[in-house]
Amino acid sequence: MTTPMAVDKAKAPKIDVDEFLTLAMSETPAELHPFFESFRSLHSRKLWHQLTNKLLEFFDHPLSKPFRVGVFDKFVRDFESRLNQLRLVEMGVKVSKEIDNPVTHLQFLTDLLERVDTEKSPEAHVLLLSSLAHAKLLYGDHEGTKNDIDEAWKVLDNLSSVDPSVNAAYYGVAADYYKSKAEYAPYYKNSLLYLACIDPAKDLTTEERLLRAHDLGIAAFLGDTIYNFGELLMHPILDALDGTPHEWIKKLLFTFNEGNIGKFEALSPLFPKEPILQENYPFLRQKICLMALIESVFKRGAYDRTMSFQTIAEETHLPLDEVEHLVMKALSLKLIKGSLDQVDQKAQITWVQPRVLSREQIGQLAQRLAAWNAKLHQVEERIAPEVLVSS
Image (cartoon, rainbow, N blue to C red; front, side, top):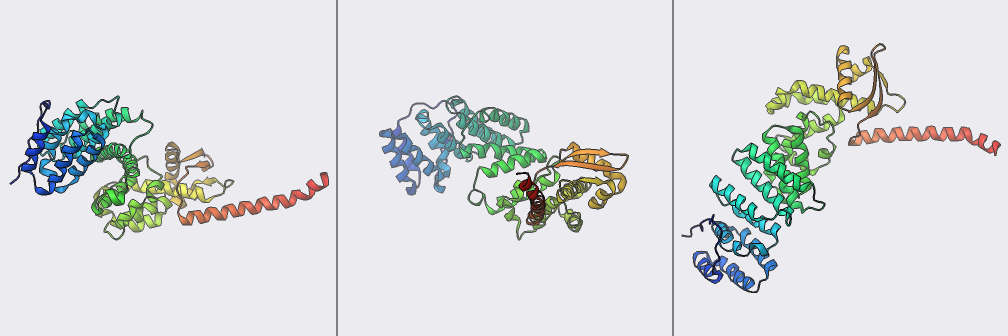
C-alpha cells in the first residue's frame, strides 16, 4: 500500500533529483510513472515552463493525491525560484488541500508565502494570501482572515492587470468572510465580483451554483444599502434556482425590482421557509415600500413628479402618517432627490436612482418616449410656419 510522502517543514536541502525520482517511481502506481520520467527529462534540460505544465498535469491526476505534498516539498522546492511564481503558488495551493492537520496546513502556506517575492510577483502574493485567508476562515480564525484579506487588497488595488484566477481567489474568500459575519452588502458586492472572474457553468457544481444564487438573493433582500438588483437579475446564476424549492426567491427578487407590493404580499406566506426573512419582515416591508415609491416616480413623466402624500400612501399601501418618514428614508438613501412640502403634504421628486428595467418597464418607457416624440412633432408643426415667414 502506498503512503503519503511526509511534509518537510525545514528549508529544503539540495537533493539528488535522479535518486528522488527513482524512489518516487518505486512508491507510486504505474499510471504515474510517465510523469516522473518526464520530470527527469525536463529537469535535466532545464525546460522550466514545460516542467511547470507537466507538474500541474500531475497534481490534477486523481492518483497523485497521496504524493502531491511530497513531490512539491521534496522535488519542486529544489528549483521553485526558476518557475513562474504565480504557477508555483497555484501548485502550492492545490497541494496544501491534501494536508488535513490545520497547523501543518497553515504552516505550509505561510512558509511558501515567505519564499514568494511580493515586489517581483505581486499576483502570486495576492493568490497565496487569499488562500491563506480561506484556510484560516475554515479553521475559525476570523481576525486572521480579515487581516490577510486586507493585506491582499493593498497589493491587488495597485495592480492594473490581474489574472482572473487571482481576482477570483480574492473576491471568493472576501465573500465567504462577509457571509460568515452576516454582512450582507459587502457579501453581495464581493460575491458578484467573484462570479465575474469565473465561468459558473464550468467552475461551480450544480450544488454550488444553487447555494450561491440562494445566498445572493438573501443578501439582496437584507442588505440595508442594496436597492438596485439589476446586476443580479441579469446574471445567469439565478437560473440555478429554477425548478428547485428556492425558485420563489427568484420571483421575489423580480417582485422587489418592480416594487410590486401585491406580489410581495402574495409571496410573504413563503417567508417561513427562510426564517431569516421572516425575522426581518418589518425591514423587508419597508424595503418593498421604498421600491414601490421608486417605481411610482419612474412611471410618471418628468413634469409630473410632484406627488401628494395621499398618492404616495396609495401607491405604497402605507398609512398617511408614515409617508413622510418613507420619503425622508428614500432621500437619505439617495434613492431619489427632491424636496418635501410638509404644509401642503407634497413631495417634489427631481431624480430617481437608475436601475435595470423589466420587459414591462421597458414597454412603459417606450410609450413615454413615443408620447414625448409626438409632443416634439406637434411643436415642430406649430413653429415651422413661423420659421418660414421669418426667413
